[in-house]
Image (cartoon, rainbow, N blue to C red):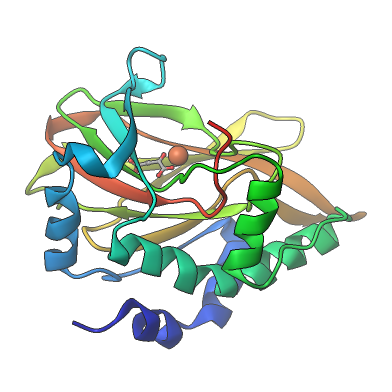
Length: 237
Ligand SMILES: O=C(O)CCC(=O)C(=O)O
Ligand SMILES: [Fe+2]
């Protein structure tokens, strides 16, 4: 198995950065193998490795269920989180700079964790989600506290057309003085989707302005759809 470290190193981060700047998302095809996806999916029923189970209907977050992993995170997830973070920092920092936001994210994952911990954000945010027929996820942002890293990642662990139908990954982009633009992505099993957590900069006539983005999942028409999300900051609760 190719290590996550070498896979991450082989990514063309220059082109990821330009896609992130242009669209607020980028997809790395076949980032995880089918086996890695199946291994993650097999963790779903293991009660001991989660800190919290969220029945989405109860909170009106949609329909389905998700679970937040406990520390220590499973190796594969920990490795994705630690290895990808440093490549996203320059993108996030460039965004803060053009938007005149006085914030610079630290270059190391450990320092981001330290910043979260100092604000009382101690709980891990990586999660695994499961939607059955009729399942969906309402549009949202995964902020979890004062300290939040503005880019996150997701891998769909099920195969579209084979394991499920429907269940597209949907993003919306707020258009100034207008309604929001919908964006529909259909990542394949194993693709890594990198996307903005709250906004991206767009160049206007008088410099850059913020465009708010949200994400969610459209209704699963049949079958079961699993996904694993890696958010880089920790949560207060
Ligand atoms: O199931 C999905 O594709 C979306 C999950 C999600 O909202 C997230 O990972 O933050
Ligand atoms: Fe989310």
